[in-house]
Length: 289
Image (tube, rainbow, N blue to C red):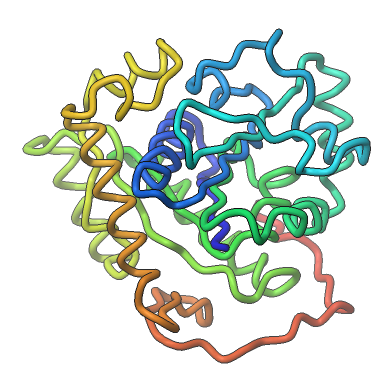
């Protein structure tokens, strides 16, 4: 089982679009996939056609210790895709979830119930770092960082990279960057050229080969509550996300291939020695975050 968080501490970067369409593409490739909506806005559920009245239980109940993860799994239109909604309907529930998520082990322990049921688990994270995102990162093998071509997006990527270093030190030494994914990409524009140049200079080894083009079909599909491949499989957006899934599956098909989580700079694919977690080590969170 591979657990992949989709995260960046900034809104409007394509986290939910990436989570939903990557999960759907993995399922279309007949990989048993579970999508977990960890964003309190519940956008992944909306993108899959779920309304508030259809969701009776969800991730909140898991963190509140009233349900196991197995009891809050919903089916989707795709045979190989299941879904865990974020059932946060009040400010009080959101505040309680924030308090409950201070225990960084909740998500990791919850996932043990389903570790033999799925090939991939995709976690759609909120645009923050602390709380539920930290829980997701502590439970994940890797993280996908979706970003638009902009100066503020680059800053958010750097912020997440620093935070991942802290996560490795205190809780999850094996987490690695699955890749940086350019979303809503418009080629032949000045900002795309500048952003691409900066990314290649700083994070060249982290960049996915595929980029997600700016494509109205992705927004239309979400509006109608369907993954893009079920709305218009021939659209550029649907095809790009299927290429992303194919790239990830191809990496995982090589035995022993993982991203090197060690060091401050970009890692490379190769074998990584086992590392034991130091349970007593608990430094404070980075001051800058």
